[in-house]
Image (cartoon, one colour):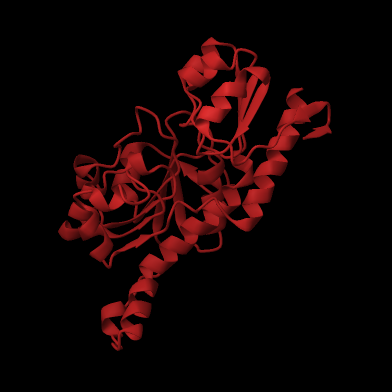
Length: 291
């Protein structure tokens, strides 16, 4: 237990859900990470809750509508891991465009294949960003030294053009992009956004990067688009289904793991040693301001 800035805090990182339900009514606030679900039952049990703070960006593990109905303030900290996400997206993109994972695996297996690993240069390409919040704008800033044309679409904001990206319509994203990078929250509107029909409409073959939410992208559609030449490569930090054994049980998983044009990472884009601390610092500052 600790007392600072007027808050009395209990730190319980290993508490289980059933244990939390027994004591949650005692607390005025919750500070959670991605594993803890704040659903209707939790909110109803937490009769004294005034705020729920998420040490991260995504709020899809919280029933936001019901929390608002109950007058509970919701706080998140996307500023804390936006640099981590932007850098990870750059890493996935450069690795895909230059066949770094594929070439490394081939050499370790005894093959030296230069022509088969000829890559693409990022310079001169058009990078389309969907979602221009903290994560999307961080990715755009990281791209600023690569001499690319960065265009961005965000359904929920306008007038956001800056020195790093130019605001465009979704039609322009589909028409001009050589690279598509997703930086959107998971909502009913974004769930399954990238499906067969969506990818069909792109005018040029693209590299696809998803460091946002796995359920925004239909994995089978990405694999279909790779076979059709519509997607040149995909960097996926997140998937529709994550963790084993559930992941291995998906009908598309075997094809996914064997596909040399896909790079996978285990939902760690925003999860660096640096961001772990920054998320906590940002959250602490916001809690002080909210008091």
